[in-house]
Image (tube, rainbow, N blue to C red; front, side, top):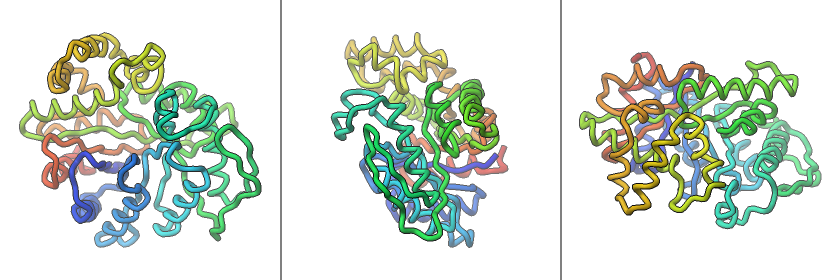
Length: 348
């Protein structure tokens, strides 16, 4: 199993600090460095920045990847162009992850002007067209989101770039097994990783692909801090930002996305109680403080450095790539570095 590190905007780093920590990740033995994508800095540029900085330590640079880019932000052609360029720049050490983001909800579609179509169909379109373009194919395709007529990338040789699919539910996991190079998981218990691999393997077998042909990666959140209460609250806030969903969520909202994912893992009663607290006007800190510590430890780690590596190993069972997604109780360079050192490969 490879171990990577994942950094996002919540950790409070400057671009120069990002570069310094990328070099440190290489010194610590991490295999790769990953970023999610939102509407902040362009994630392809961030990957290039980090990869270049890591070359001060490792001549070929660390592997780098996006997990994941919500497809509403880019067309299939623009995703393939950017990913192909990153592959060329890094000598093939780049992975593109794509995900559905919020297009399962009407509000999410309105935000970015996503057209009609079932979420699963849209992701099938993106996987088919992006992977085809990156393989050097000339693509003709008409669908609800993408309409391409004889489009190919003018990159020679073709930038054969792995494309991972962000997946949570059974149908998306099967789609990943059928069409993607890998599946990008998020917020999983070890049992959920095993279940996810079963769904993915079923999709691979239906397409005549061997089960080992599709990789499984996951972000595993870790917050290292000697102030255990502060670390617990930081991890709880990170969890609930996904698990609860927006205020006033409908029953349909709760049957899809991350809410459904957490309920499949047995968090239903806790989330219902926290929802009720929130509707009664409880502060976000009070809601986070009410999240049971044992349930937090089902999907992440908080606390002193000494316990981090062992817990990372437990949570990473069944993965091909475990990505230490850094959560900080106090944003800044020192907090990020403490977590990176605590979880460095070989520490467990």
